[in-house]
Amino acid sequence: MARWLMLALSGFLLLLALAGWAAYALLIRPAQTLVNDFRQIITLDQGVVRQTAYTPPENGQLSPEQVQRFVKVQQSVKQQLGERYRRVEARLNQLANQQVGQLVLDYRTALDLFREGGSLMLDAKRIQVQALNRQNFSLEEYAWVRTQTYAALGYGVPNLNPQELLRQIGARDFNPRVELAKPEAPAANVRLVEPFRDELVSYYPFTWFGL
Image 1: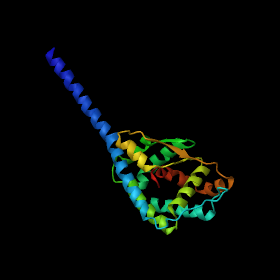
Image 2: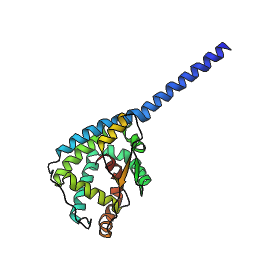
Image 3: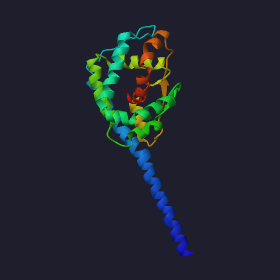
Image 4: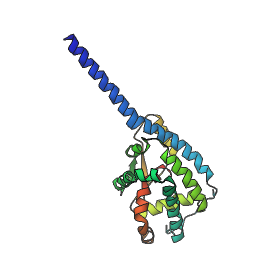
């Protein structure tokens, strides 16, 4: 009996150890990486040269030039990430399809993008800042164009408050949730962005991290 109890206890402790390792590998470590990347993303935004305020048009309509510049920024990120982007592209499309029409984002669904390390989002942000400068975007104009573009495709973009996300994850809340902004899209915007739908949708989860 004593031997059986010892074996049962050993098995139980092993299961606890494996559960702890799984929680660390699948949830805690990716969340920690997300926290570190968000801190640096906030700093990298300071590298955008054009810091002027942007006043959007009252009718909410994008210009063809804005859409072209926006697409070029995304293309730069994809091209320079190269194989790293292609390895996660199927997962990005899956995440985007899950979020169409949604008004709340659960960040836990995207933590697997951080499990392999390599600071994917952080490197993408460095590339994006350079692309924003080449396309003469300010942070405010880019954010407005991004929201309007994805609204025209049926997607909401996070009302991103990185400091609040950091606070939640720092308090070991590994399931932070944020509201998604999805204004009514003018028909003109829908026509402008529809030709770029596929490439814009695959990039959509990057918008969850300020890209």
